[in-house]
Amino acid sequence: MYNIESLKAEEFISDEEILASLKYADENKNNVEVIDAILEKARQEKGLSHRDASVLLACDIPEKNEEIFALAKKIKQDYYGNRIVLFAPLYLSNYCINGCTYCPYHGKNKTIPRIKLTQEEIKKEVIALQDMGHKRLAIEAGEDPVNNPLEYILECIKTIYSIKHKNGAIRRVNVNIAATTVENYKRLAEAGIGTYILFQETYHKETYEELHPTGPKSDYAYHTEAMDRAMEGGIDDVGLGVLFGLDKYRYEFAGLLMHAEHLEAVHGVGPHTISVPRVCPADDIDVNEFQNSIDDDTFAKIVACIRIAVPYTGMIVSTRESQKSRERVLQLGISQISGGSRTSVGGYTEEIRPEDTTQFDVSDRRSLDEVMKWLMEMDYVPSFCTACYREGRTGDRFMELCKAKQIQNCCLPNALLTLKEYLTDYASEETKKVGEKIIEDNMPDVISDKVRDILRDELDKIEHNGERDFRF
Image (cartoon, rainbow, N blue to C red; front, side, top):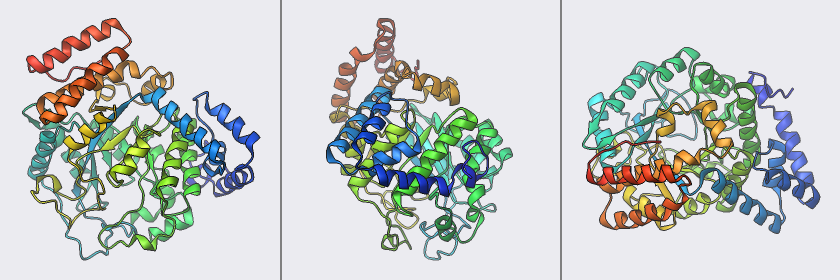
């Protein structure tokens, strides 16, 4: 039985409720009266239920789809403006004992070299990332209690935060590791992590169990209930995601929204981020074996409908997607992207891009500087801001401001400050020229005269006094 407040996976992610929602969507996907009523509700920018959002996703009417895309663009602008947050993944270890059939790190893969970074190697990786200009990382590691125990992850986090190189510093470490216990989540919270990220992969239990035949991850309930344990352990910000292509995308979409609704109902805080990766090629993985892959048009529609349904959440797209694909979905709802990414263990210190330990093929292989210039040429403001996390604006405190559309009062000035740091310390001359214009063009959008005066003073101090890390 569906129960949004239950702590049991099969009750807050109810197969019967998802199937009923998809049936309702099929019955109404061409019903203009129902669709118009849903769109009118969505224009209040307070979000939609999984059932209403499923109708919009299924909608076949071209002019209504245009309305859906237009509304997604407006909501993205109203909540997040033209800012795009940048981050990079850092792979610590590809040792893994799980049997996931879509991931090259699975335990039975004997063709991939197994590597675990030492703390000295991590220092070199972090310095390389700092020299690119990155300020926030998402650390990744396979599930292996012998090679990658939590003590190793905690030591890595401590090392990352300790490294100060020239003007570089990693100010936020997000963590993407396997589901664990409440006690371990407490230890991660105490280590000062940003967001805890865990992809569900698929919400369809039968498919989940087929794709995870062995290893700790094979326990569907334990994995699905991880975010509740993380929040119980004191982690304010959690990030959801599914791997589109493993099962039917409309099922995954409904399950993803139900998970967001559950977190909101039980903990008062929905997901800080939602990621939308798609199945892509990798060592020992043939994407042709996955018959539920989605095309670019469907992908764009999913992004737009998530943005409408969960307007407050940050949405992430990685370098799995091509430049063309990322360009399209940026305007529809995406607020965070990775740049200059390496998905291999030790990849940032290799002169030649290594391929033998990659988790997945990278489609967008441009440097961070190229990505920065590209974003600004489209009038986006690239941001490395971590101010909310370090000022304690996390969890319900962040969401209260975000839902009131007040977070931009802090975000735009902070984004411009971190952009100025990048331009001063790392940018090519061409990128710097474009960036200085972006800063000036966005100054009028800083509403408060007082804030604008402070901002100009701090921008000047960054450029001429060598000062760093201002934040509102």
